Image (cartoon, rainbow, N blue to C red; front, side, top):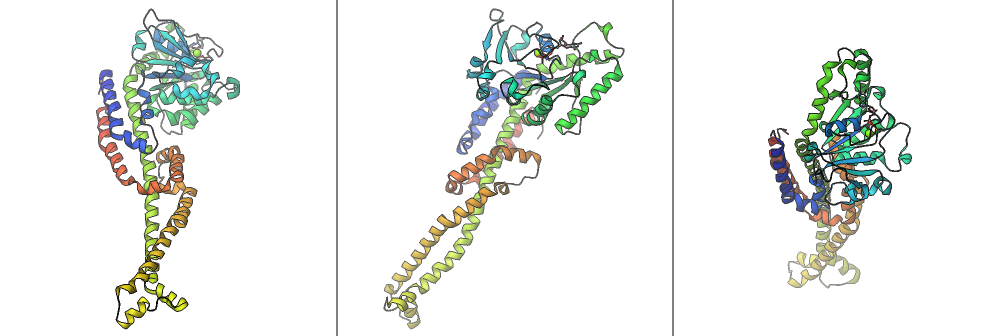
Length: 456
Ligand SMILES: Nc1nc2c(ncn2[C@@H]2O[C@H](COP(=O)(O)OP(=O)(O)OP(=O)(O)O)[C@@H](O)[C@H]2O)c(=O)[nH]1
Ligand SMILES: [Mg+2]
């Protein structure tokens, strides 16, 4: 797989395969397969985030080859701007956030619940630029230290998280003045980005390096950024950090800085591979969603198995009770009330058992069996369900951080499914569904990963 055309073709195949193979299963467990493929709705998205004044808008203007976004030293942008391709005639048109977020043909509907105040800070600009034929770019307000969520009027971190989930490539920009990073950046990386965007979709950039006085100064900023990133991502290995600066008169650069001249182009090139990354992104998303479904089904199967084990022991106990009732039930009434005249045991001992002697033993056995069923249904099963709901984590093996993350996302649904219809969960053959899911993961999806050159 090496071209964007192949990627588009593969994306189409994936789009039809997932609903065909797993649509019904997702539905059975109350999940929507269309959510999994929501990212396929529109063009590949590039999200540009970072500290205020780190040069996000300047970089975007450079990529587009036009001055589309306002730039300036103080915090400049207070809105999210989607830059979408347009014909020369349409170029320059702006579409308000409320229309963009509600448009079903665009992927931004998950932002709806951030409310009106986000809508007034969200806009789409139509721009005529060849770059925007294959991708759309989102410019964002810079991250700040002093501004609290309330001051922004909407949940900034939540919006960034949602956009990161939708985006195929995330450019995270810092500058040497703020390589120490600031509170919001820390929170974005820690709580949002690492969870929503696969790390391979993030491009870390230290921009404005031309403002360093010399290489020592640059190394200091670079070192600080590396240290902070490792603290924030929890990674021990360092991701590549692009060291870039906006094109300027080379004579202004401190000596030795020409070495990083090509980095800006490398970064720009990586934006163009967004369609390929998108397939990767969607595959990861499908993989994650299917694994989420898997862990959910696995938990329900464990619930079912646990109940069946309880049922088995109950059957053993009640089997004995039924046998005792069968053998001694009418002897008891014979002694207490004198009825029947001859008990089953009496007939057995005298060696004259007639069909009539079996009527009461059978009735006793039936009553005992019914009592057993009632006890299982009304006492044993609710007690078991209650116990499981109280320790729902024990339904799955959580031996990796990945499985813990998956579990956190589906745990509520598992609880809900058990709570609302526990008998349904016992009746369903989750094991067969697990087999279907495993077959999809190990064969169908693996094939896609292989075609993309990513072995799993
Ligand atoms: N020296 C230098 N200045 C830059 C560079 N990139 C951007 N600038 C300047 O830095 C200032 C901020 O740039 P913007 O592109 O507005 O930054 P931003 O990240 O979009 O800022 P916000 O929208 O406020 O978050 C502007 O005055 C730019 O001209 C660079 O690589 N080197
Ligand atoms: Mg800006």
